Image (cartoon, rainbow over all chains, first blue to last red; front, side, top):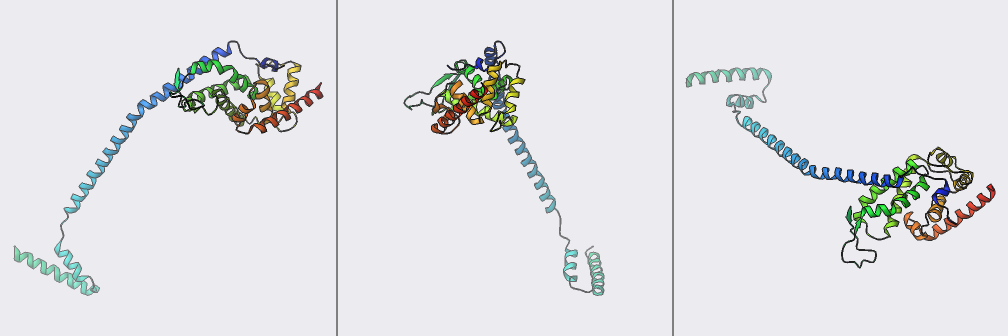
Length: 114
Length: 180
């Protein structure tokens, strides 16, 4: 003879079967609704992400352009460059002398031009 | 609640996908799954939690069910896996030998257990079995599942299941005779 669950001394609350089935159906419904919400909202999340990325890239490009324009605006000072080239290998005293001469020449040139 | 299954039947001869009514499935198998789970986890509230998780998984997995086994075997397997997960989490794995106290303590603590002396003696004898022997014995004797179904459920071969069942049956008889 087979032993039934009741013969093992197990019992359940009243109406357990029906209440449990209803609870399970409610849980499944809730889970289905939750996953549906996630599915609906996910395209908007993705679109927002893409838009934010595009804005960020656009912003970065603008900054780089501004920096390039600013760099291009710097003009070379011919006097300083040629002075540096000429005095690169000179000793300290010779260097002072060369600077003095160069400044004097530059001053005379400016006078002459004016 | 209708769900379209991805399979085309066990024999792969049907030309249209199977549609199953989830409510009908719940109606037909709710109680058998509950009792199977209850006999493994013992306490009603725990069995109810495991049962709910089992049905959520069945609902989620149903569209991908390939029909490689019978649907009830597939559901029992999910339930069994959920039981094992629960027992592992609760660290309620029973000792291999001798009477395991946690088994009987769980029973006595459950307000939905009202076993008399004879029923307690049966549980006492069941508690002396190894965990896998007890599960296989329960699935075969109380739930009346086929050896092949049990083998599919616990992912082993049929002969091992038979060996464990007969071993458990012999041990149980000896234990009950000893107690009488």
